[in-house]
Image 1 (tube, rainbow, N blue to C red):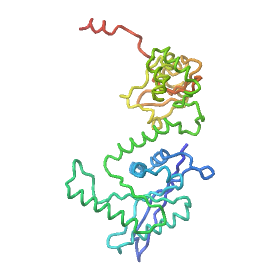
Image 2: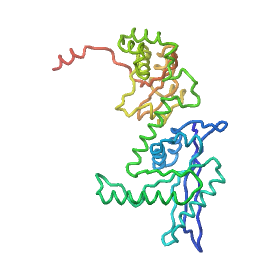
Image 3: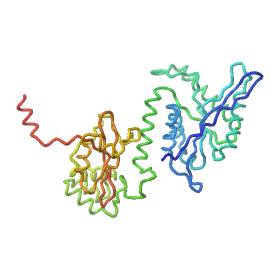
Image 4: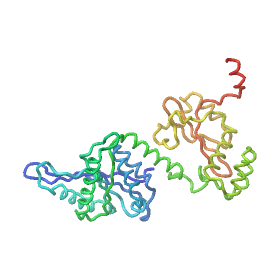
Length: 345
């Protein structure tokens, strides 16, 4: 469920005698709130921006990384990102700023929760360059940035004005990385509406079941990790990873998707999900995979990754619910690989 929605702020144009002389436009991000309290977080801002363009994603990412109080800002305010504000060539100087002020006044009437305006202070006249820029170009760029930021603040806009520096370049790649990070943040923090309050993957009840988890680690031969866990020195994610391997590897006889395939749980939201009944009917080996799962495990989602299926399997344990991803490729049986290599050499 998306907790941050887009609203086009629109284009407001000041008209001259025969044609527009200036324009301002942007995007408003409206966050879901309950009794005034924010629902969601910064990852929802990134996810919502993906509905538009890669440039929008990069501007949202720039706001988050360049303002340490970004999380506090969205608790108090919805956001308006200004895409464009400019005057026609030859128009009176300051016309673009007047148009921007008029557009924001209109915005205030329509979206009363918007109290923060974000403007990109990266000067448009400086195109991306490969390698190291000459010192004079760097100096000119910095001077242009300072002039633009000072000018923005001199306008006296009745908003909390935040300047960002969203650089141009390989926006498609950078936007994909930003989306992956946002999805990973949701995945790691159980940031979905239908998640239970506790016991979900990544939230094992280590306090209640600490002794039993330690016994499980020792049973699997992980004595050193169990000792660190007992002494409170083992990282939680390391314990979770170990428990997942023990639980799933003992009963699921299929391979996990490899990182070389381009799969990552952080990018799961970008894959095509296949309805369960359709997967059983149309994907070869799907019915056997489901039939071979133990009683405490079930397939909760199936995704297409290029030309093969990836199954999200959930295991119910006393410690909490665990999830892991598997392909429909069976694990190979154990063989004496060293002997095989000697025979063929």
